[in-house]
Length: 199
Image (cartoon, rainbow, N blue to C red; front, side, top):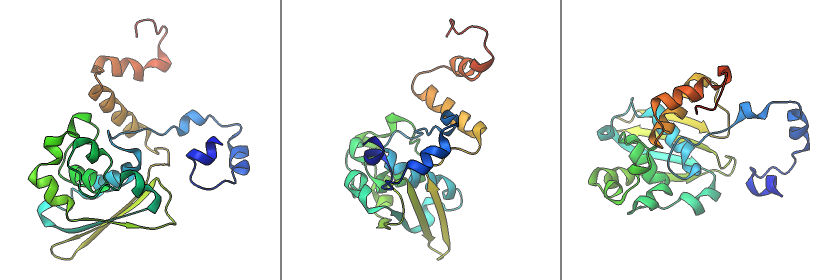
């Protein structure tokens, strides 16, 4: 039931579950780094890989390729409210490319999503579909005004390989949610703490 509802469409899980039976699955935990629909996260991560190489004013066209089923959830083509922006592949792509902090819920407000630069950039973002991709995968292709191409691929259903970077990102999210640097450090040292009462 649950695997069918929340899975990737592959209903043949017996072998995969048997392989994990003696594993510490906590090490494969997945985290939400962005304050937007989880189905937009792979595309946001693609932008973060490419944006330093392609300034906004050099972008001619960006094409995101995703599984078609996610468009019912995050396919709002021209968001005009902060809430719509959270559920828009084009909107989150524009915000991320413009350097807005997509991990901060305060980014997703009406005034930000309606800025001229955001609205202009999301008009240069196309969304294409590919049934072979899972709902957590995305491909990005950016063509700049000199016709150079830049591409990226991301799968948010894969656990982080670099745990130090993951820790930094989680600490940043923790602070955005109101936690202090001291609290984040205490949590990071939890495995070596003698007592947790102070937390």
